[in-house]
Image (cartoon, rainbow, N blue to C red):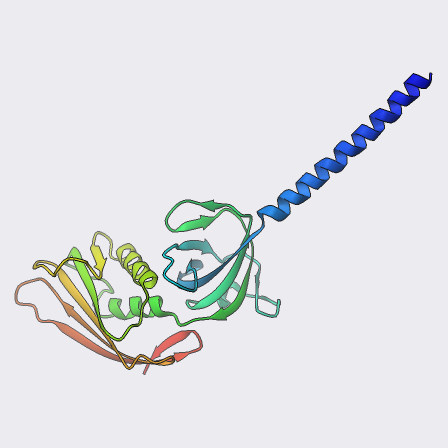
Length: 234
């Protein structure tokens, strides 16, 4: 009788230890996998956001949808996802898993926090270049090279991102930002020259040279000021 009672007590104790162990492992797993990434939203179309690390020349890029996600401001107040604009700096909290596509994707987003803003350099320059063409993209050239002159404006990561978005927009075209080789004939050339680049003001000149024989270069001069995160032409 004593042996049977002892066996029952031992069984109950073992089950209790096992249950506690399972709860501890599950809780630990949830904490370990929760990750936060700080990104600058450099481009947004509709509800789809593209973000890159906010500092340095890290060329990693992420894409995520802001629709249906809990979004909070710097004070922790719930806000609309429409407050996420190009230039916004966000902390994306997710389950720790990233899909190795390009751009990368988050497996599961838990919430997004806005904690500042930078200037929307990539989105601004993309819009200005597209605005030089009647249909917001080239009609004839299939190869384009983009060069930068004058003062520094885009970093290397932003140049890589600009190249990506132009390729995506100009279906069928080859776009190379700052090519390593010397210019060759038969390729359209876009030259962007920056001057008087201050923290909140900018002068820019864009020249487009079509490769078609007899065509003349077109040039556009722009003055812009920074309002919040957004460059505005004046």
